[in-house]
Image 1 (cartoon, rainbow, N blue to C red):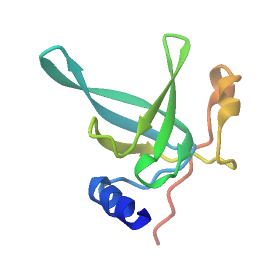
Image 2: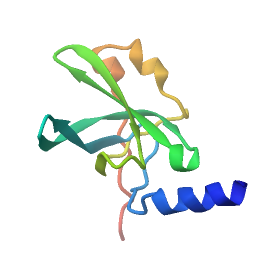
Image 3: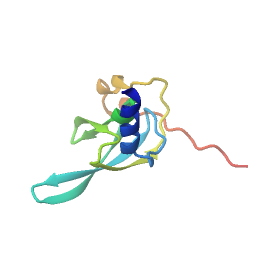
Image 4: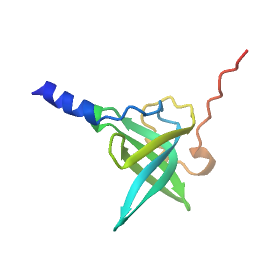
Length: 119
């Protein structure tokens, strides 16, 4: 029974997911259906948590919109998630960055990782 579920889940998983981790700034393109119409909405923010559970994996993205904190949980392998782009890499020493919810302004920023020097 377990192998049957693994087979079904393996067919539904996406292969083009970029490497990201908590602290990274990502841009998630999500397909939105409004009545008969369909459009793509972009949500850009900091990854504050990720859930690795095979086909049920998800990432939580947080941004500040007009002074209000907005968080969205995106199931990675859902058909409505068109693509995920990594905008920048942030330096985080924890797996869950829930402490960012309490911080405001410049205190809520994460240090950006610098790209490795090429010699």
